[in-house]
Image 1 (cartoon, rainbow, N blue to C red):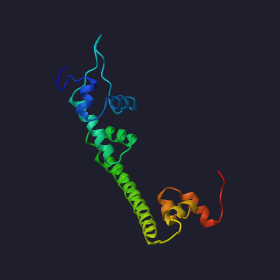
Image 2 (cartoon, rainbow, N blue to C red):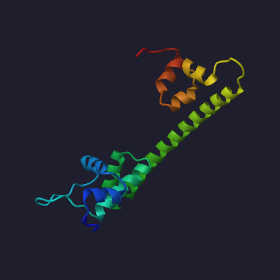
Image 3 (cartoon, rainbow, N blue to C red):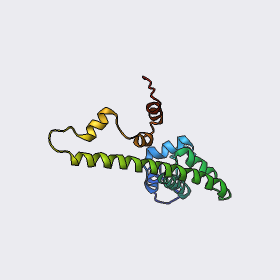
Image 4 (cartoon, rainbow, N blue to C red):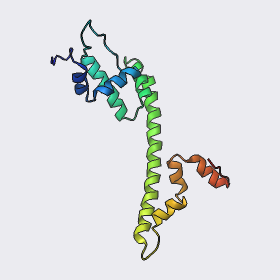
Length: 162
């Protein structure tokens, strides 16, 4: 196999990009990566530009960008759309901060329940299991878990059967 960076098979390309072949194909179907032409009777070849692009996609994903957001960033990659890229990043940062706050609420609820488990003696039911069985998680934790409707219903005294 030729290791020339402009003459990579899909397997070598995937390895250099730090992904597997199916990821390459998936990204191609999503329009994130181009599928090179297949020379007559030959196999497709990839180059360093392709490797850089797959690394861009993976880096953006590590920052929490969805594949749709990555596609938008790729449309802005010419470097002349810094304002638009910044706006997309600001929205992502706000989302990350919201999820972080939600996780902190869940952490506090779990810490409290674990502490209650450690303080019980004798044949008393486990507070953690009892709370989960009774659905008595804190409202903050329910909101953090994305159960906003259930919290609103509980506060208003209404409920729906699904």
